[in-house]
Length: 303
Image 1 (cartoon, rainbow, N blue to C red):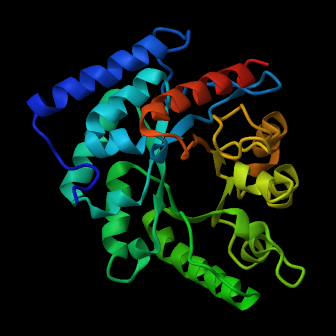
Image 2 (cartoon, rainbow, N blue to C red):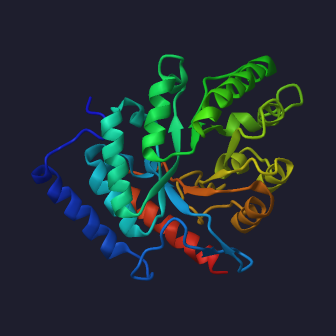
């Protein structure tokens, strides 16, 4: 199977690149002609400046990314996103290819604050390669995207120990370990939510990458969780959910209390990166979901 990021010739890439960029231009919402860079301030809900960028989890446009990574990145930048998050197929890249991708990011004005990783990237044999890939991409947060089913609190305690060890291995390289939650982290076991156990048993520099949609679907309060873990929500996944349509909604079209979440993330959560995600759309809808999510983001920030 061809991995994401496999190179193709310029002649092969040109039609897809032109098609993606034309599509984004047709769908693009009104915005300044000069796209903000990573350090450019946006406006918070309350109207004060903040440097926190908004990015796209590239799983949102996974079909296009598999076909042509460079053209997909160009189309994401054309929409107006400031950063991207690669998912775990990047672990198959060579060091040289990661440097090439970093060059494309720099040319497009994009950054890569975080990556999503399978556990295979953190074995003793694989970890040095994973670290170097992230250093070449400029990533700071190496996030475990998901974990296998865990049946009891002892299993979650072992995961916390693994995260603590991983954080210790990454710290000398200037990187941080993180965990991305799904629904099961919010489901109590013997009266304790696994996410709370992991938070209590890991050092403060372990990033708790809050997936807001999963939290809300599970009936939990994302604002309360952020406020209970100050400084640890350095990366926040803006994935929406609604009781009517589940995850088949763009960011901002569901039931999540985004204004309150963003306010809490910026006053106590220590957020450094917002990541819009929509991973439940058909291939022909992927870029429309990315476009609509950013449109809703801008509308929310303008309030």
